[in-house]
Length: 111
Length: 114
Image 1 (cartoon, rainbow over the protein chains, first blue to last red):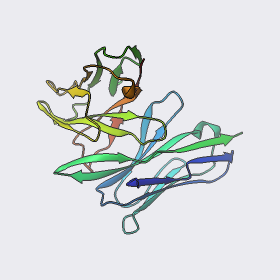
Image 2 (cartoon, each protein chain N blue to C red; image 1 turned 60 degrees about the vertical axis):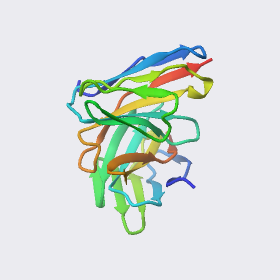
Image 3 (cartoon, one colour; image 1 turned 30 degrees about the vertical axis):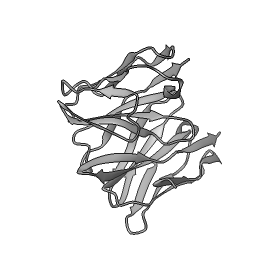
């Protein structure tokens, strides 16, 4: 079983819909990252959070440390939001911290 | 623009050939790391470095070597390429690698070994 599980694996929605992508993890973490990967492959960091909630434009990320769960929300979705969204957790390993990644959620927004 | 620069973007190798994937950052980040991304799997850590002169193995280090002679550069060497090393490779850096700073990723190198 992966340490980081994302759901859904694929999500297709109409433009304007509210989007939720979920991430569950099974280990103790220092922080959680949400990343965006567009076709063409580059990876951009959206959020890093260790508690509570962060907002940037139409994107909102929340984390519940006790439940080992995080969500990424997109309000008023747009076709340019189409991408793969990756959850990654920062885990302490023999004194160093390392990222462990989920397999990603492929989001397609239809105009 | 400041960031992480990876070269080349694409490469085709024959089995047994060697090559070096370059990674450079100009943000004075201490932590640098290499990942590979394969279909259906999350990115996996190959090697990482917490500062110049210090490197360590990640989850999938076999077949790869690294060195960190300067803060800016962290090259990844394939000594004898194998088809199993066909993948997309990402380099990333962070000020410390810890929970106080985010990560910056390069644009990736798509490697095919035939």
